[in-house]
Image (tube, helix red, strand yellow):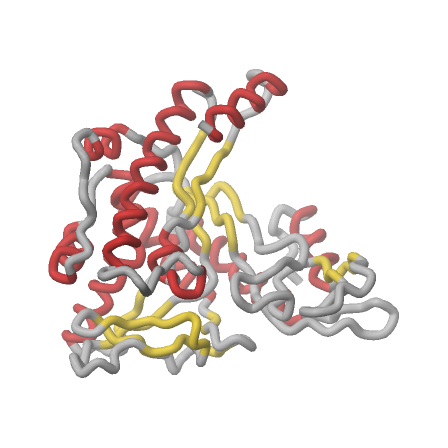
Length: 332
């Protein structure tokens, strides 16, 4: 209902003068990081099953929203926008490769197979069935899911991940980069692992621009739909220096390397029509508050003191302004 009301307002104000590009954002984070987001109720008998049931409802709602958008606004374009990260095997060991296939299916393809093809990924469904997580599917759900046709795929990318073969001893789940809120790995399915070939940011997230190119190629090869990146950026402990300057060269380096990899992906034949860095202004991180800054514009406050809330342009602001002006031609 909210989507329908919003669409009517857009149509009343703009009519057919603009094309709409609408995304349905990041439902997979509820499953991936339910405890960090507060969506996982540990008091339930089977909390993960409840999450997958809620996820099924969201997938059905997503399909309905796509259909409604096409019915109400025939010129509009709409697509899903999950967080996608290509999963590497920890080694060429066959068991590690199977583990990477497992995690790719659960983390990535479950959501995009449903959005594009209207069906559950076979590996992801087998996983849910084995674990007792399969959702109740009501009459008509699958028909609704299969009827929706996205015009593009949007996705958020920050880092790749690595999976190793499960040890099956209860130790497969590990904290990502030392962050106890964000964990990866599941006993008997895959073991969370780090990638020794990648550097890490201040929060332990691995920085992998080439993995961005690989992710773009993999998504496009699987689904053959135009792609737009809806989030890509670097969280960091920015420091406000004298004369209201923030010298965030590390953010410039991160974005430069990732934009270069988009350009390489385009030469590989990938259809990329847009890129949106995260974010324009500093904002509140999911569970790391104001300390983890992403923006081109610094907000003068900290966790417990609002200070004067001044907006201060960082060095990256002026750099990205030139990138926009040159349409990506100038990345110096």
